[in-house]
Structures are given as structure tokens and as C-alpha cells.
Image 1 (cartoon, helix red, strand yellow):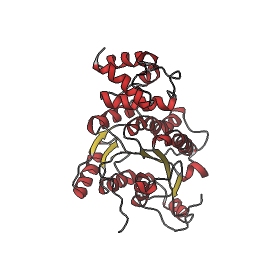
Image 2 (image 1 turned 90 degrees about the vertical axis):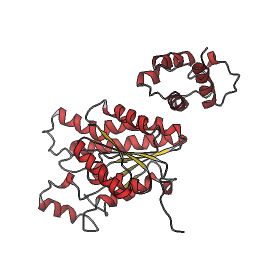
Image 3 (image 1 turned 120 degrees about the horizontal axis):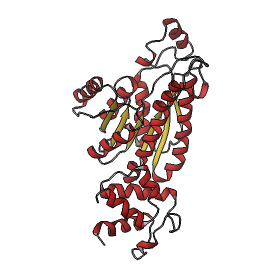
Image 4 (image 1 turned 120 degrees about the vertical axis):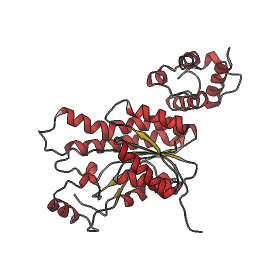
Length: 78
Length: 251
């Protein structure tokens, strides 16, 4: 697993105030505690800032879990 | 110690900044220390406005040429802001167009263009702005509506509709973004001495002046002062409001 994708999990956990041990593959929109629509925009903002990217609207709606987030980062050349 | 508004270290984006209220707003924000990005359609006029700000403040604003009738423009504007500043603290949605006409004569294209420039582009910029503001834990958005939005006006069927919709967008955004430290407010100018009303017949203009308690038109700077206040921490508990700057005008 690359540093980038490890960092993605860290960013999501931090935004949701989850422990570092929370499994990355359990990070899912509307399933993971706290990951609601408002938290989603905070996660998007944090991801955009950290990786210096600007997501498209489709990216934001597709970004429904950690794996989808990884795919989006790859598409943006991260 | 006298109160001072200090926006040093903050980044502001002002649309419709080539002239009138937008140009005055960009200048006041820059005078208060903000790094300002100015947006306008007409590059030479926009550059002249930016040069004026540089002459007064010593800082050249970031110039972004964009036509907000283009649905892709807001995204391009934000890419330019991110590339230049990587943050945004103040968004001033000032760009707007009047659309005179009586009901029954508006083409669909004219209605859609009026809504696009006055409302839809502002909503797009608010969505993009919210993401950038969240990065730093807050910000202030100021949308320019109009006294016509809440009172209506003969001949302004499309414009008043567009500006009224902007109030709804402002109040919804204020509720939704408040938990993220982002305040969203509207300013509602009355009769302001700008190019927008330069085409008004002298008789009509005088009649409008008589509808104002202060018996005069406002200046762009008088409107810009309100925006400066709403952009600053002086207004830290003001959110979701429509603040008139109209000398007590009755339509």
C-alpha cells in the first residue's frame, strides 16, 4: 500500500475523529460513525488540500468509501 | 484603541470587480490587508481596476478573466485561486446583470442568462468556496442581492427573481455551513450610483431618489464598507442575514 493511500485513511479517520486503528476497509459513507453528508465535505476539503487536487463533482459523489477514494486519487495522478 | 479591520493573511475573491460596487469592494478589502483575486469579463477594464488597487495599496491583485455566463467558468476561477493562493477566506459574489422588460416579452434565453449570471454562477462559486474555506476552518461569503428581491419591481421580473433565489441559497448555505465556521450573508443595495443605473432616464432616476429617506443615491464605497464589515471578524455572529444598504428606500 502506498504512502498516499495510507495517508488517505489517516485523513478520513482524523476528520471523523476515529482511532488510528479503525480499519481502512471499513471506512464507508453513511456506514462509518460520523461520515454523514456534512462530514463528507470536510473530508473532501481535507483530501483536496493534502494532495493538492480539485475533485470534480462526480468524484465527490463517487467518493463513497476508502477504496473509491483511492481510485479517485489514482485518477488525479496521486 | 480604535477598532480596525485587519484582513492580513486572508484571501478574498470578488466577482464583477471591473467597476462599481465590485471594484470598490476589491479596493477596500485590499486596503484592509487581504490578498484579493478579482474576476471580470473585460480584461483591459479589469486590469485597469487591478492597477488602481496596486497604485493605492502597493499590492497587485490576482486577475482572473472569466465570463460567468459560461457554466464552466466557476470551476476555472477556483482552479486559478487554488493555484495562486491554495486557500480562500472571503467570497464576494457581486457579478450581476439587469434584465429590463415587461412580463410577456422575456425570451427563455434572457431569463436563463439572467438566472445564470445572478444566481447559478453564485451558487456554483459558493459550493466551490465552501470546500476551500473548510480547509482553514471557516470563512465569510457575501452575496449581492437587491432591494428588488424582497419588494419586487416593475420591469424587473427576471432580475428580481434571480436575486430572490440568491437569498434562499444564502440562508440555506448559512445553515449548512455554519457548523464549519463559514458565515454566509447577503447585502441588498438600493439605488447606487453605478453604470448599472446609468441608463435610467433622468426623470425616473429622480423619482427613485425621492423614494429614499436620505434623498440621494448611495455610492459604491458605501456598499463596499458593508461587505468589508461582513467579511471581517467584526461581524463574527452575523450569519444568514440580508442586510440592506439603501438609505431606507421604499419601492
